[in-house]
Amino acid sequence: MITVEHLTKYYGDFMAVDDLSFEIEEGHVYGFLGPNGAGKSTTMNIMTGCLSATEGHVRIDGYDIFEEAEKAKKRIGYLPEQPPLYMNETPLEYLRFVGEAKGLHGAELDRQITRVVGQTRIDGVKNRRISALSKGYKQRVGIAQALLGNPKVIILDEPTVGLDPIQIIEIRDLIRELGREHTVVFSSHILSEVQTICDQILIIAKGKLVAFDEPGNLERRLLAPSEITLTAEATEQEVRDILSGVGRITGLDLEREAAGNVMARLKTEHDDIYEVSRAVFFAFAEQKKALLEMTLKKANLEDIFLELTDNARQGAPASDAGTDAGCGESEEAEQ
Amino acid sequence: MIAVLKHELRSYFHSLTAYLFGALLLVFVGIGAMLYNIQAAVSNFEFVLSFCSIVLAVIVPILTMRVIAEERRQKTDQLLYSLPITTVQVIVGKYLALLVVYLIPLCIISFYPLIFAQFGEVYLATSYGSIFAFFMMGAALIALGIFLSSLTDNQGFAAGIGIAVILLNYYSVRLSEHVSSTAMGTVIAFGVLILALGAVIWYLTKNENLAYGCCFALAAVLILVNVLDGAALEGLLPDLMEKLSLFARLDTFVNGAFDLTAIVYDMSVIVFFLFLSVQSLEKRRYN
Image 1: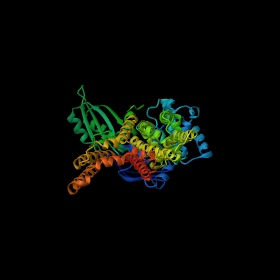
Image 2 (image 1 turned 30 degrees about the vertical axis):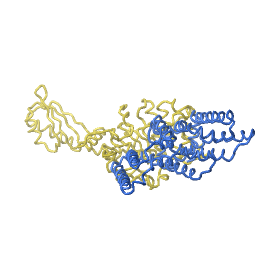
Image 3 (image 1 turned 180 degrees about the horizontal axis):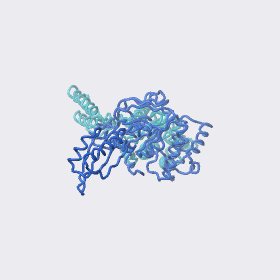
Image 4 (image 1 turned 135 degrees about the horizontal axis):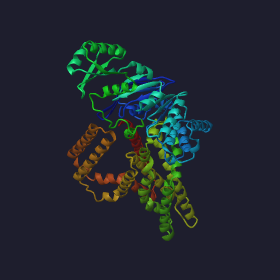
């Protein structure tokens, strides 16, 4: 459906998207996940032909977005981060213009407008000025615009940013509904949102694709090691000696506590976590050192996300400048 | 393109812009007609157009200032980029809409000579020839206005620069008498022009090498010409200023000559600035 090949985008010297390649298939809801400034908006803008790529190709249904722009663009509906609305028009006038620009006319145009107005539930406000509408309704008008022309793919850039909790739930429901008829790609920096709506997740950090999988698989994949936290009644050196006898520990972090105890944080691969914890327990028992506390922490999607995006950040300082157009406001997350 | 045209027209007639533009043009033409045709009892309607042409320096930038700048400010340009229409279609659609807005008061004005003809002898041929030239000149100024609007997201800035540029063009013939006609004067003036051109190239392409390259190449040509044949540069600047004046060409029509070169010049200006507007819009995709 959408093929992205070796996409690279520079803003001057700043690399916003770095050799990105992925494929989007029909009939799924895709979530673009990444911290602010990760290159989500830039990627979406390139995918929809709003921005040129420095290198690489985007093909929609086999049509190149730059070379066969008209055919490619007819297959996508796009809602940019800031809904592109003409404030002194009514939703009906606005939709009529977008529909005509998408090549619809006559009875077909009327039919489609009626359909998208119903789908996005803006019937009650369709004759009011857009400038007078609430942010949630403006967002819906923006989505209605994207739906005109019945495109195969709907691309929504941070559709829930800046909305109140009720509006967020409504927009999420709407996206879920759209997912039944269209391929939907939407971006977000809120993990839970992506987790609940999408059946495929793309995680982007520093312009690179760091993960692309189903939410369940991502959790199972466990790129992030699991963690065991323990408190022992021993000196730091003793803890270190005991643990050195236990294999499969990939990371160790010691901390002295007030009561003369030592707190240790060890990392290990998930498959081994119970085995490792058992081995740790017996190792301490053998040395007659009391384990006061031991907690196992399995990696969840949140950890994976943080880990992946952190890895990508290392080496270069994170910079939001210029990557996601108008991304400044998206900080006000409603987590 | 038709969709853009219809949309623009609807927005002009929903807002005050079209009415304000038409009203101002009609008021000034009315005042001119009163002064020349009624009070002074001159039967030449074309003088009125010559008198009123300065008004375009103000009302055209007011009409065109929002055309692209506003799209940028509202971020609706993103919609235009993502729709299955080309930038050429967007610019031409917008331009045609502006021409319609401009043509409506002109249609009303074109009845005036006929009305005056009821009361005496009016040279209809020169009158209508001048109205046509007036239309072409305005059409060229509108194209310039679109380009200036495409450079910024600030409407006021677009209008201000537009007024300044058109006024400069209006007075360029009179100014040309006062500028230096020596070779040295031409070299200095062209040097400044080359620097300005370099700045525009840099602004449009953000490519320093290209801007410097163009500047140096043009400066080299200028110096070479000056060294080889200094006499060729004498009087070139005032000559050029006269040639570039859109308003001076209107006067040819007012004086009763149907000057095809003027029409060709107006058309070239239209195509040139519409082309630049398309480039300016495209450039946003490449920044």
